[in-house]
Length: 387
Image (cartoon, rainbow, N blue to C red):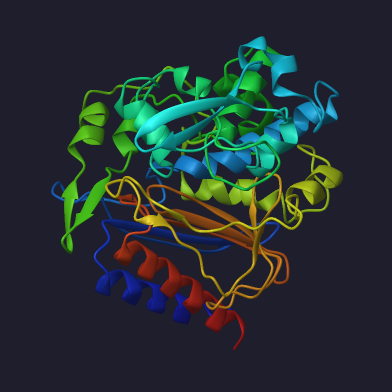
């Protein structure tokens, strides 16, 4: 890998694309082999975005929570077949919701939700920005808005019989709740003790302190080819407001360097955090003949949509998406990946034994400029590798 050429190419990508901040890191199993930062934590105040910048990793929290579930499985506290309702009777009467002619109907679910369904997103749970049924319930004040603090959104109905379809939703938030229930610890405390401290991920947390707030990058909205600070998120940031609910599906903040340390776990054959058996389960297809399919957004302020390259067959393991073909950008078959709503992305490539993370802090998810930037960087990396 020619670091000098790669560095120049990525700087050029940043310079020509209108993104507020950008970090790119590549790691092998032992150390970072490439690292670059551009832009600002705060555009107007010209606060640089650098290796100390704290980023909202959003749904890139999910693989971390999923790994912690496997720690509990290895301790025989649960299994993949454990039913959700056996952990908490709160979930013993989950209903399937249907939206017909703007009317909500419910019916009893016959299948039971199991830990494996939550890990591979076949539980039936959805998201309010992707599924009109869930958005309707939130709009009608029948269900807590997930953007509000608290855990009442966990009482959402499901959209189909567990195990029969793949759908992206709040499943991993349920897994975070399960970790708290089984360990009698806040999710932040469990992760700190069992993962973050062991990996020296000292800037990864659900609980922002003054130093985190000081280095936290602001979120910008990409509107009409321009950038505008997201005032709602900025208010919480300026007022130093932290959430009381530790969202296992999307609540962590971190740094680019910290996330590289997490990716290394899956590049090493031996570690003290999780067994290779568990890693193999996490990174291989766990949805059988089902596929990860595109989902249209019902809230375009948050997400353009979950659009994926139709030329690549996509499966899902226990915490990661898996591409069953080479991507158009050059990433090889069998790589695992996921992303976050503020346009952060990562993948782990087992052919070349590297992990790569790309962070931008902007909305909506997969807007044209962030997606263009992501694809151009991925293409640039693999052109460099394959020379």
